[in-house]
Every structure is written in C-alpha cells, then in structure tokens.
Image 1: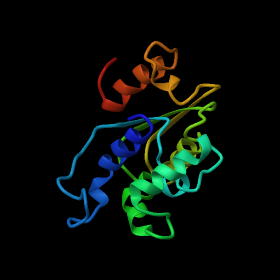
Image 2 (image 1 turned 135 degrees about the vertical axis):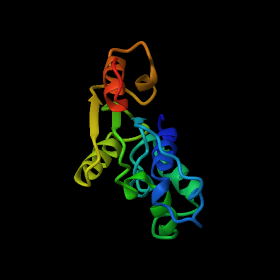
Image 3 (image 1 turned 120 degrees about the vertical axis):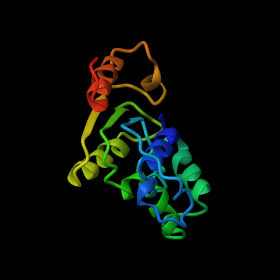
Image 4 (image 1 turned 60 degrees about the horizontal axis):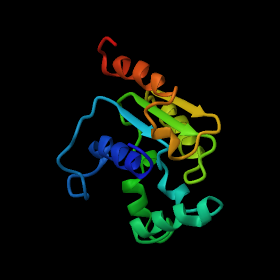
Length: 157
C-alpha cells in the first residue's frame, strides 16, 4: 500500500491481534507479505507532525480517528500498525528521503520496532525521492521490489 493505503494494508495484516469484538477483528486475514510505500505506520506520531505539508498529516490523522492520541488513545492503539507488531510476515518498507507529505521516520522507526520483536523487515530509504515518485513503476527502485517479493513469498523469481 501507498501512504494511508500502507496503513490499511499493514493494519489488515495485523488484524489477528485485534479482539473478536474489536472493529475489524473478524474475519482474520493471513497475507503472505506486506509492502509499504511511504506508509503512515505510526498514527500517534503522524497526529503530531505539523512541520510537513502545512500540518495536513496531523489534521487528517486526527480527523480519521476522531481526535488526538491523548483524547482517543484506544483508537490509535487499535489502528496503528506500529502498535500491532509483530505481523509475522515479511515486510518491505520503501520511503523517499525527500517525502514532504509523510516523514521517512514513519518507515524507519516502524522497521526498527518491528525488527526488535522478530519481524523480517527490509527498509530502503530512497535518496531525494518524494511522496508520489515512490509509486512510479518505471523507477530503478522497483527492481528492489521485484527481487524482494519472490524471496518473501518463497517462490523463484
């Protein structure tokens, strides 16, 4: 997934951690791998980011969850991929250092936390790449995705 789509993809992969009565807790899904392209993977941190894009990331995150992290902490805990690790599937994180919409720390810090709890993480920071260029299929970094994916899925390239 890209940007907020990465949050949804990684949240879906983590749904097994949600209780049966929690929103999204059923049915469980079992993806084979997860890929984040400039993903919003720490919603509490995203809700505090005001230096990027005129505060759009913070405003949209708080609007999505109905308040700031200190106002609705249970919602952040339930929806934020960084709080739901380990996912127990291989994960590839691509993020441009030139991203002015979502800071690369979203991927970097998620990768560190997920790796600490045993998840298989590959983090690739793309120098000077912006938020939308990361999804362009004709760029050289897609060869990284094409190399990673068969290994992650356990199939030949």
